[in-house]
Image 1 (cartoon, rainbow, N blue to C red):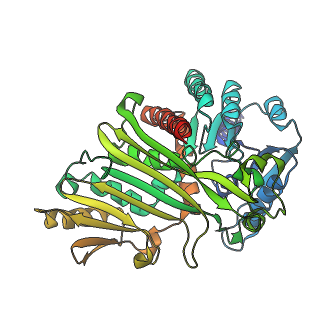
Image 2: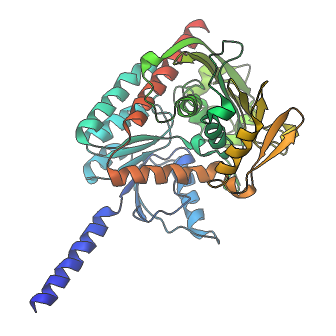
Image 3: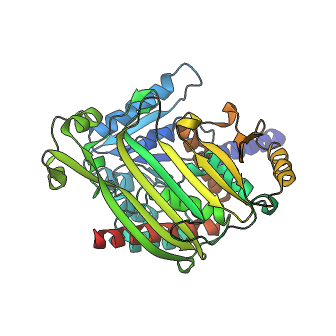
Length: 446
């Protein structure tokens, strides 16, 4: 009898541990499709029952329909159960009803920093889509959130999907092999040591469906300008590739230049991507001659531990037929340059080239590729006139949507350890310090 009771208590204890291990996912006001992409994959560590707090809106309906489509798809369906709390006081209700869990933020960015701070103050972990802050005046609140998170031993992490793009991963890998790349050059304004540039489009297809964007997405006071929005990805990559797992402090950077410019959208363009016949009143200040000016574009030059870096973000309305969002990058080394191109010549597929300098050690490159093929099977080196192309098999090209699962799994590992690496935290703070300062500089000159 005592033996049976011991086994019963042991099983009960294990059951409780497993139950406690399930992460309670709490989605807050999911206005951006990234909120759904995080749930495109099922994770055994996350409870299938997801609590959603949001105001009544078309944004919420679109989010729920995306989750429903994931649950009902034929191949590898998910099994999410959306528990929706729909009310104007959604955030206050969340703070009252929920006791613990992970607050997932991907939507209107106007109050994002405020939500991050309050969620941390109330004992929640936070998994936030970029950007964490869009207004330079709000940066102090973000710093405060990280300070409180450290005191309370809470996780605060942003979603950096571009670290999972395979050509970027391999560019980073090769840059760390000195016999191949040499050392990162210092560069200058005209030829920076590292360049990250991306072109995006308002009209696109996501999860097989034309993307409908909320009207507020075109209000930079709610979405953020290009310098503080997509640029956060590109700045992150300059840190991550040039100085892996290294804390980049504010004093390691020097902002040199920043500029901004707008993308014009006609009423017809606007209707195509929002479904609305007219501009909402809050967009009127951006309208001139019936054309909407969206300051989604920006570039900045800075030095990173003395090395020149450039980041540029461009938004167009629609990509040419057969193309999509594109990425360009170059890392300049003393032995070779590592360049990612995505032009018509590459059939608009991101392609990594190794551009050798005089005295380049080809044997070292071949050895590096052979070594990397153990981790990235199928990669091959082919000669292309005066440079080398790295062929990447289709199996390694997972696509942007799949990258959200990879970042989420990384966050889950942090959750298991109850700790985010110190360098990650330092770099998040430094990254947003740079982007908000770049916006200030660009706005002061334009």
